[in-house]
Image (cartoon, rainbow, N blue to C red; front, side, top):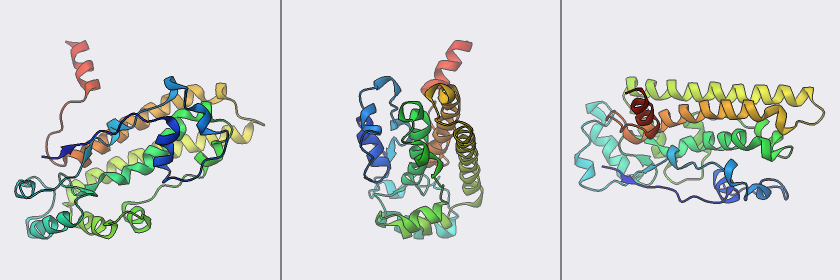
Amino acid sequence: MCTLWVKPVLSAAHQFASVRGKRRMPRGSYLQTATTGARIINLCALSVVRPNVGSEQMTAHSKLPVASCHLMETLDLLKQASNLVNPSSGIANDFLNQYNEVLLLVENLPVLLPEMVDELLAWKRKSYEEYFTTSPLPGGDIAIKIYGMLDAGFKNRFETQIAKINKVADKAIEVIGERNRLSQELTAEEVETFCKQISKTMREEMESAARLVNYGLALAPETSQALADRLMQA
């Protein structure tokens, strides 16, 4: 059983700084949007479970998506990276942070213009191995090793879901980039509807990926949106 870990609702500036790895933000850009509460998103739903591996947990991983021949080695590695790799799936939640970053940019772009256009267009995705090879987080090498031991079918499910997120992110950057080239100065009115629509799609795909990370092969609980949809149809 994983320990539930919910991020507090932070100011826009604090959320963005944490996603960007505490990179210095340009004056007069994102900090000015800290009071526009209606436009600030909460990323809690995308990373609500943190690994917390204890002795009792290590005996209850019959659904951990690794081949039986690698199980003991994987459990030993999980102990070494207990603050990074989720024990339910063998995947590190932090990998999704790069997508939290681009989602935050797209979702809030109408109030970040024009400062953050270049930031969005410069965003580049990384594979799991690339992400943890360049990450300053301790245990990145172990995260890569565990990822290599995952069941091929489960790993394929996860990478297929990540490919869906990449497709949406690429589309957002392509459209914003094209509109930016055609306009002398991109305005909020030109991108507001598009950003709202595509960020909704991106968030849904990211939540699906987060559920795989947080629950692995176990049946994930019904989301609040799915519950609401089911009750509306009843």
